[in-house]
Image 1 (cartoon, one colour):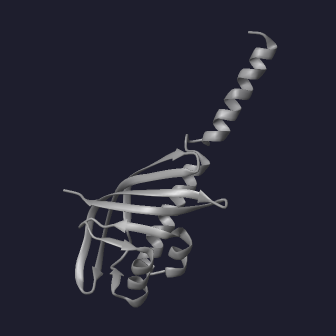
Image 2: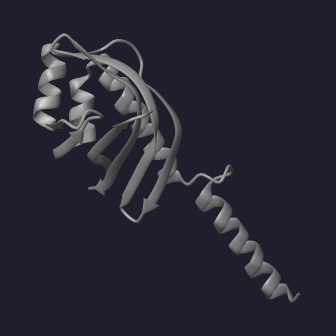
Image 3: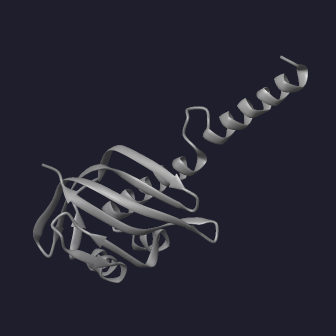
Length: 148
């Protein structure tokens, strides 16, 4: 191998490793995992200010039972106490796929919530879509399906 080719190969390996991180996870994937953590913690604590920052204004959610909410309605329910999480939200098997300024997080979660006194939640599969706007990742849609 020529010195120039050897140097080019070393540079390529270095760029590949730095782009994907030491454990094979990209910076964007780590950012989205962090957003998922913020999302779950904020919901459990009814932290409407954090959720307002994370969600785009026209965000929607389709819940596991098929009902849908807008950002305004979801945050109003949390703020009023009509929607109450009874502890932490756990996630497992979360994958993040990045496509430019769009990222898709999918996995499984488990949580319990009451909405207007009615118990909901449980074991779900979810998909959430994030977009990068003005340099920040924001969630644009969330969808959940009951796990059986």
